[in-house]
Image 1: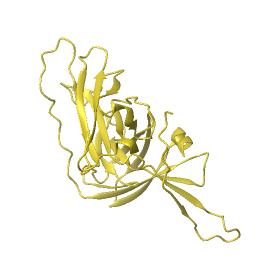
Image 2: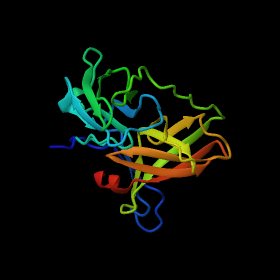
Image 3: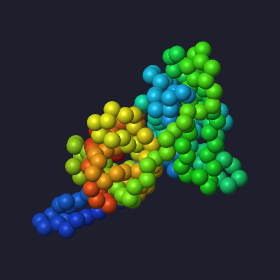
Length: 244
């Protein structure tokens, strides 16, 4: 079996029905099925904003058999150098027994890189940066990454929608990336959102941003101009809707 047999937490919310008890019924799904996660971000060791093309990821180590992509599938495809993984129920970390795995990343024209990831009971989210060095390069260390800018706090609530399932809403618990709209820049890590909610100080008033979620081997995006302290954003979850 490739899929984790996990029952999604489904909350059914009834909104005042006029004619039928089921009218306007919404099924709300929380994607938080992998409780302990690691966001893996692969970039060039010299230019930290460049993603090596055609990078691939393999999983090994102690708990390799129990590691899944955030969607609950045994599908480890890097999308623009990004993937989120974590242990399934059989390897859930406890105070006296952490879970671990080893990742190896390869890309044409680069030296392979390996790293061990440890999942502990006191840390539900972590970010793992993997820096690849070009073959023949003498570069060492890690690239200099500019810190996120600091502006007034903005609260965002993301809701996933499904064109083929109008009665379904998705509350994404996952990592979110962003970039200024039409900038041509690579996406930068913004933070982790819990059930669709995230508050950040990295967004400037008056600017428009693209937001990106990576789930099940695909990217999902939405765009918003920032002029106030809070927004409710809709994200078309496309083929991810088939998982619910």
